[in-house]
Image (tube, rainbow, N blue to C red):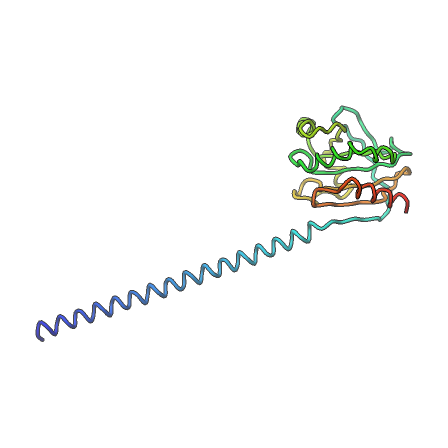
Length: 211
């Protein structure tokens, strides 16, 4: 074989080798892109599932099922012991919330105490949180809330079915419970949006007391 023939054969072999390497690289790139697409599809499906679950669990819930309201005695941030049975003869609105760290929860209470319509309706509002006194009083001061908060160890929040209804599994959601003068629960409202206007809240109270 001549030198020229040998050179052409070598060049052809090198060209074929380069083509083979390019084909292998192209196949590798295609597989990588496919993995990326499949990963994004999986992520998208997971996100859609999470959003759907959040939408289902974050729906506003209300109940007008009447029952004897579970009695309790809790100490409030002013150091006083407050019992539900001691408020017999008054309409009582329990306000459960995530408490400290939830500014919307404190703002909700600030709006309630500033609205004279609640007192005019003869309604006693009891905010209940699963916080220490120091934790909640710091947030009360920041948001200008003066109404004493009742400090719950979780037993009262559990008795009224509010645990895990908000953003945290071990804390109450944004819940209202209306108890009439005879000690019967007349209404339960759960608001994962973390807000209910004063007008709408009073409307619920008045409607359920009248029914």
